[in-house]
Length: 403
Ligand code: ATP
Ligand code: MG
Image 1: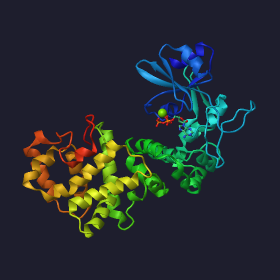
Image 2: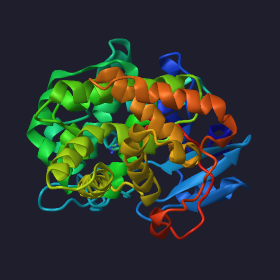
Image 3: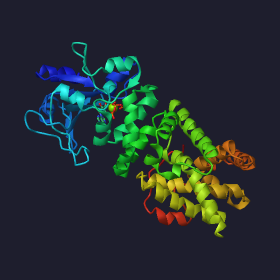
Image 4: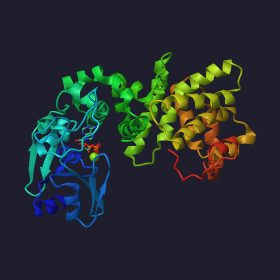
């Protein structure tokens, strides 16, 4: 529809990117992106329901049949063109600006992967494949366009994208695409933590988090992304077992279309670090509850040096951790309060993971299973907090679902 309309006005227009790749693979595309030689202003004039958005590079959102189609003007990468315009990079080669318009050929070259640089003309039913994307889809290969080291240097997040697609599509990395990663992985540290968190969500909330985690880990990108807190150097195996179980549970929930929250997964991934820190603090004479609380604060602070975890998630992570020693005590007087805690279910799930993968006995989870059966109406009903934590979050919060 959008493609047809642009073509009627005399422009070139194609469906591009992930949608074409997914169609070739026989999967249902999440969304459709359109690329055209019309400028954002010209695109806007073609549609009634169009809005120009974005400052760094303008894109146009066109509403069509209840969906939003993202329409972008062909752009080119950072090389100097015949018009003398250029997209600039800084002295280290990182791309600062890439909103210079170009031809379809240039637009294809500035994309990340060959499999993402396919253009489909829905009107004539033709596919434009200038960089061998079709062959790579057929042989299930992830290949960076151009020189991998150069492309990763321009934008280090491309390394994460490479592994994300490899895990999600179960494709192999082409050898130079793979070899480049070890040469540029340190550059990920210069990426703003807010962008890394956005990318983290795409990596871990898409239903393939377990294979993605393994790939990131084997290419040494996991620690660059999430910080040292995600690795337990002293006792890696039990930590990894717990993390992988949390990841595969999350993937299963996504597959079943049940709700998932980043807070639970983050709490599980950083749990081994939080637990170890709490143990250190405990030997300094704090009570288990105080030690856990202080450890949670420290681990979240350290994680946020890498990933800008939004407050609503980091507060929930700390609540889930704070509940661990409290659940363990099984104090009759506290049962109702704990059951009603908004993060009770998530904390209980973490306790289950700890029992399944560690050396803890199963009494505590059995106890809380019984309590939940006896008071199902109480579970998670407290949206706010009555205790000292309330000071930490003065604003009323939106309703959130437990994982
Ligand atoms: P998904 O199905 O996950 O949405 P996608 O391929 O559509 O996959 P997007 O992140 O939506 O991925 O990006 C759309 C297109 O923009 C990609 O197909 C790719 O061609 C291009 N692109 C996105 N990010 C980059 C990047 N960092 N460098 C180069 N090209 C990129
Ligand atoms: Mg997309």
